[in-house]
Image 1 (cartoon, rainbow, N blue to C red):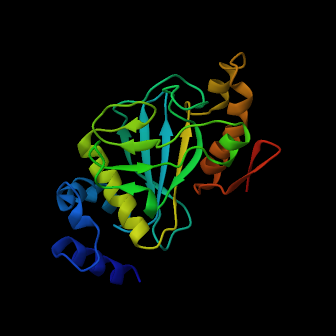
Image 2: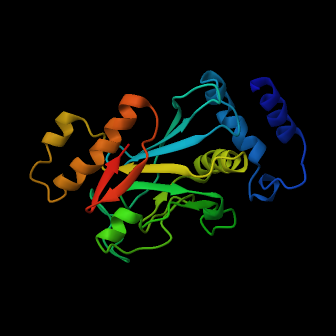
Length: 233
């Protein structure tokens, strides 16, 4: 099964095929994949394998994780320094507050924008059900290029080319949606103790459960909202 998919991936890299979205992108997607091929090869994952994204505000890091089709766990393929995000530690509350969100989001095939004025972008679909339960508002919160942010997570153009290409390939290959989990910082016990006086401490305790689930299982948790709290499983 793996060998067959490698051959298909090589076909994608060597020729344009009917129905492929990638040749319409405003950059050389083959070159973008070339920059990350060694990272994928070292982790035994391939173009089209499932993708998971974690973002950490304080550390200014976007992590790209992938999962091979013969593996139940995700592996860290590459960490990117975030070029820009806006606001402070804490969730986004309302439209126009220039705050980058925190929480559990996802992107899908309909959320991709290869013609974005910020090079290319994908929508993380804020507000989610949790945000909506608190009446939080906002729209068009993206991960994109161009290194400028008004509530989004902005990468350099070269970085977003790699990330966007792998996100799109995973979706085109059948991944229904790609989780995008966003945290204020790496939520270790010691780091949390520094925030006990923060007005967001209870919120951060809530999302820490999802953080801990992935740290333990190396699989993004499923989640729902009950009584205005995240519930993970």
